[in-house]
Length: 251
Image 1 (cartoon, one colour):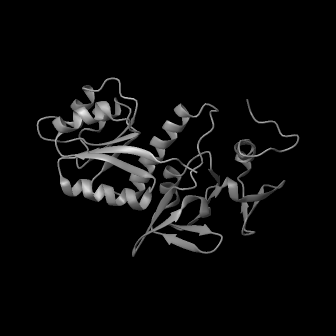
Image 2: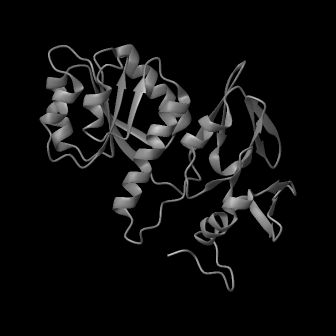
């Protein structure tokens, strides 16, 4: 179970803060917004003195940009995600190594990708065993022509490319998304999901058999091919979440 995480939001637009809060409630119910501010002066003391995991920061604010604001906090230990309507700050922002740079209007996939990356970074630093925390409580947005459906990420068996669309399959049902497979590759955790074939990304925890000719049998009995040139890579990835007699992972 993924632990709760604390965050602060700084944006000079109250409507933008409200929108971000609403997306967090749906996508990441374990997120706790401990403070939100529309003025950087009011935010500075709170950010310096409140233990948080993620800072959501508007990059273009009156008097001081988000980049200038971060320069006042050289000892920051939290993850930073920039939320902005401007892409002309991107090169400056990259130098600060943020977990994400999300453009307004907020896209659920971009936001999920940034937060998942931030949580992964936190996990790598905070887990003494060096093992990523499970993401069973995380949700993923599946955009389609009528809106966005939200699934618990651990319910997903695999993603299948269908022309320019993606079929998202659970054990009970499937959804068709208007986004291509590559977009989902960006936001799923590499320690849990593996692209076994150009048309499939599989949840490693939902694989129940690996055939020696290079075929995976999933929990729903779907057979998925593993591309010949990445079969050893798949076995190595799978070995990190399982124990297989006689198999030695790559050093």
